[in-house]
Image (cartoon, rainbow, N blue to C red; front, side, top):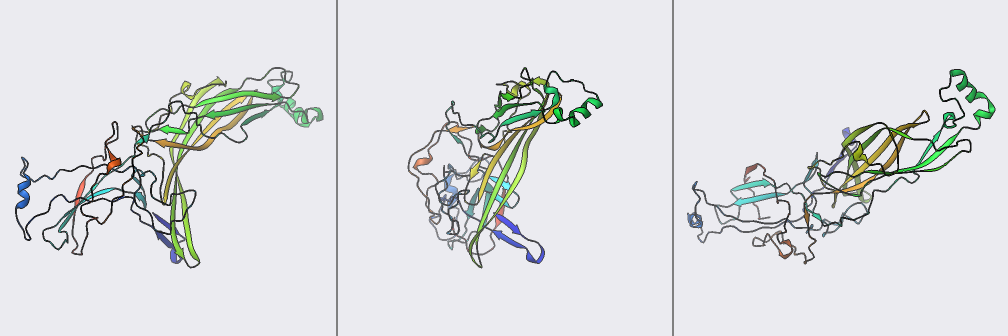
Length: 382
């Protein structure tokens, strides 16, 4: 994580790098003290290269604790045991996973070559009941309030400028403007799945109106707008002159911004957005997560624009946070966590709770690898 405060001579850069888990495994160890061709005994492939096959699974949860600057806070995690976050690259704020192979030609354990392969990771989602009723929180005062003289059927529905002037100046009109009120909310599941359709529906019913209105006016929709925004919170704790401090920032990016034309469709209770068009999440959208210094959230906003009795309105029917998960599912594993020591050369890459599960996403996507020559300084196996 990297945060910048100020500019110029007053510029301060706060950085923090943490490990979430680490494991190592010895693939080959020669029995001789010097250089040899002993590795050829492992067998050679058709192309003449020696292959040292191995496999591993990502752990379900973070296994390594942060430093003591990461005090408890409601917005971020502060101890091991929470779900492993997805790979993410947001400028100077990243979550990265990498496989490193250290090649040693001598016994002094200084690597002569380091080969690194990036491993993009997406966590699988836990099983969720299909009948879950958790919804995105609705606005605190979800009332659509419309006023206008044309709500009264006895008033001119196509008023001339003189009539409009009369409504604005004559006392009995000026202080008796017809009004009607409805409760309007958009309903959206709190849990959304990447690559799937987002089911949005509307709850709409009449609350009341002024006495001069005989029948409940009809409300028409011109268009509905939906915006999905990613909200990345970044936290970098550090020790300042006055003690421990937290520096936090929030970065917002619009992921979806769609407008659905309604063409004057009548607004009714139970109306579904899919009647105007499908709202689908991108399959590559990152799942929500929360870890030590990073938290990725999503906020969905639904805006209804329409008219009633020649009065136009723009109304926010929903605006709050939702939670996005990957499409692939897994069963919850309750077997004990087994932490892997980062300094052990013989620590297994797989522990009891990391058994293979059907329908799990692959551990990594194909990614280019690159070779990093040793700088000559001493290394230890991670």
